[in-house]
Image (tube, rainbow, N blue to C red; front, side):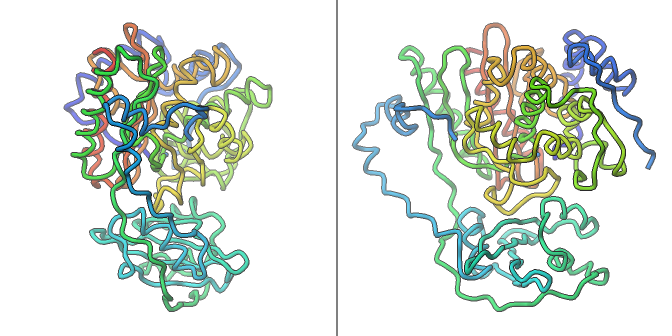
Length: 500
């Protein structure tokens, strides 16, 4: 979800952006703003196709294969003059406990405790075993410093349990919102997420179980900064080393965990901090969904004018208009694509994922773009899981490389990649990267945020400078401004390091 108001301090940049859009895309931006003449909008984006515009609305968010390339730590060591011997002296990391455990609470604890700050054995609350399907159980956590619980849902296969779903239980007034990412969880466990709503429960209370012994996981520690600088030309080493140092210092100062990766599109080198750390993707996961749609259109499996009936299973809260539409109404593929990328509409995203062949197909597309650690794990919604491993996820490197494929016309045809860039330039919600760029310089980008999660990734092309940048964070402050300022600052450093 990334539907948030712009602050007045960005007023001049907002006006400049609107002027730039009128110059770049002509009537497109004006038509989007007033939602009139949408046939012209779709034709403008899709090269004169027959797609219809917005239907009237009702009143009622691995690393690429590098062959024998040096590993990230080796590259940074080389850039900073650190010997290989010093690197080898780093103590090996303890292996993580097996995710499959003998009890549901042990499986939940393993999935969350090593990742989520403030979780220990004392933070585990009730454990419920479903009476409707005893292979499911819920485990409640109250991390230190949190005023809301997280609920992890473990599933048993054979004799062992594994954590599969999770939710931050923070919306008792809107419990239906939680159903979207918890598809497949038995109803009795869902009905008992909120004590405030027990009067409305439609099924008997699940069985309360005693918390058994928990594995020794250890408390969550901030991951290493892990600076990287790869394939940097000799003449660029000093500049990149300075940039990485500035990125490190800004990330150190952030009250949370953040990572960034910059890919120089012409020099072929990349650099950043925590490039391969796994983060919640939030709405940034819509980028590979967009690529999947364009590929399906090129293959003739979809058309922009094709009608799509919205289904109950597509519904999700958060950004976008379609959450107010009823199931059974129709939109074109072109409409859904516009809504997904310009308004970050979650219903449109889930419908498009369904139309291209499901999350498995989107994940295959991401891997084909070089994003080995990106996963569309569940339907896109406004809700957040307890840890990235139980949610949609990606890494800064993955996002920067996927965008590089679009910028270099390798994600699809040259024409389609051009339309993707135009589409990302036309969004009305994603402006954090832009805030760190000079006046009249704008990123073709996609941002996303959830509770304590803020990210933005984009393509910057201006005056001979071409690069992609992905900035992701987790476990930060609950105030959106903190994440916005972090992204602005890191975006500014990336711009200056690219010759600004």
